[in-house]
Image (cartoon, rainbow, N blue to C red; front, side, top):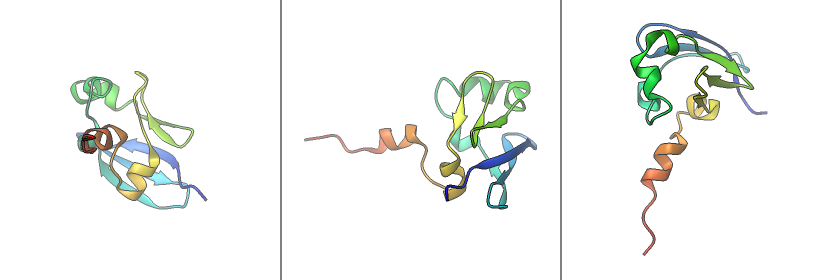
Length: 90
């Protein structure tokens, strides 16, 4: 069974309280995950960051930004970071 975000509440700064579909709850600092152009407005505009909601099990924002729930639940590496960490082909 895939675990997805069920609800989210913004707390202070870039921290959110997430409830997952398996009943697990976590306070997550999203700062490390908010990298790149689509996330920059969330870092700069508190009202936009606080507009976070859950859609299809992922954290989403009105500007189209989203965060994969697997990354939050399992403490994984976001896709943008994996792409940058890949060694170059020889």
